[in-house]
Length: 206
Image 1: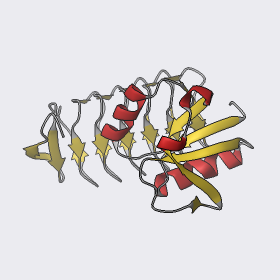
Image 2: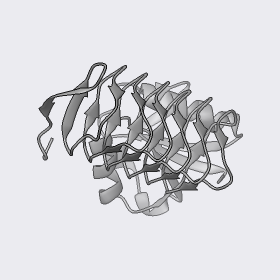
Image 3: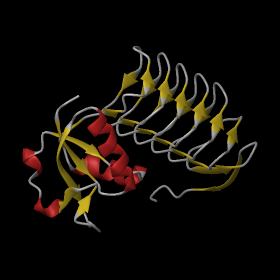
C-alpha cells in the first residue's frame, strides 16, 4: 500500500477508513469534503475541495458510503485511486481487485472472486468463490454472498443480507437489511424480506 493517501469525504465512513490506514501505518496527507460539517475528524483537519489542488494529489480513496456519490467523484477527479484493506481481512491470493476499493475488518473474500472499482466490502462480510462484484457496489456488514454470485454496478446490499449460490443481482439495486435472496434480481429493484420480494424500483437517475 502507498504510504501517503488523501481521503475524499469526512463522515462516519471515513473514520473506518482512517482506522484501516492507521492499522497499515499509512500517512493520511489530507481529508477533503465538499461541505465539511466539522474542522477535524479523529483529530485530523478537514479541508474544502475548493481549497485542494488535485493535480498534486498522488493517491486517493473516496471515503463516502453513497455509491452514486463515489461514482460521480471518481468520474470528475482523475487521480491514482488505491485500495485500503484491513489487516484482519482475509483475501485469497486469486482475488482480483479494482482500484479505490475498501475491504474492512474481518471480511473474507474467497478464491477467484472479482471485485470492481470503488467498492466497499464492509465489516465481517463474506464474498465466496467466483463471485463477481461490479464497480461502486456496497456490501454491508455481515452480508454473505455464496459462490458464483454476480452483483451489478452500484448495487447496495444491506446489513446481514444473504444471497444463495449462482444468483445474479442487477445494477443499482437495493437489497434490504436481512433479506434472503433466492432468485435473480433485476436492475434497479428494491428487495426486502425472507424470501426477498421486490417492493419497488429505483429511478435510473437517483
